[in-house]
Image (cartoon, rainbow, N blue to C red; front, side):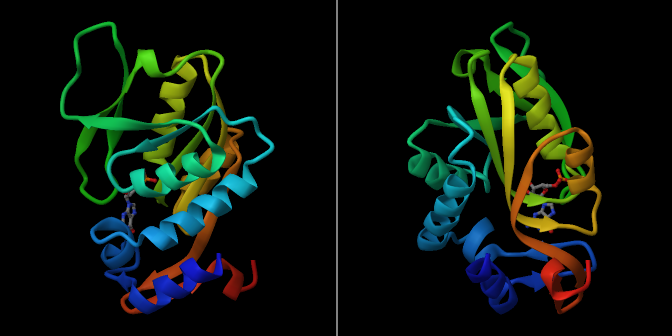
Length: 194
Ligand code: 5GP
């Protein structure tokens, strides 16, 4: 998506060969107009999949998931990051290790918000090793629902997440795909020979 790539080039900061900071428009300050454009793009891409719910992971997935859900006309569900297991039968939980922080948390979904009839679109801000998305998919499958697609704002294509998700049979659609990061350098997949 051209406007996202341009924004990354203008304001994104490659901190190393693996981490990109986009705090000025996605992760800390949020650009609502860009979020709306991205939501429209996801909704257009997945419009024929009979999506009944959009799921995301708190907190940076919420803004694009909300605009996507609004354009599709369906509810959005926020998967919560809990520090410990909830000992009740009301929730589905799965353990995730965070790429950026190196910490672990219990990704949590209340059973009352999902059912076997749901056809789910999962939205997140970044795809790195695929831990968060694979965790989301485990919860959706545990609920007996169907994961109809995964929408990502920024995919770091040089990390293993995309391959993991494709190997698991999921449809992955990313708005910006980064081929290479280095201090002060960002190259997109389309810029180079694939
Ligand atoms: P994964 O679970 O795919 O390994 O990592 C994805 C999650 O880690 C995303 O939800 C995002 O919050 C965070 N993340 C991974 N890489 C980056 C990055 O380069 N920049 C930022 N800002 N977040 C990242």
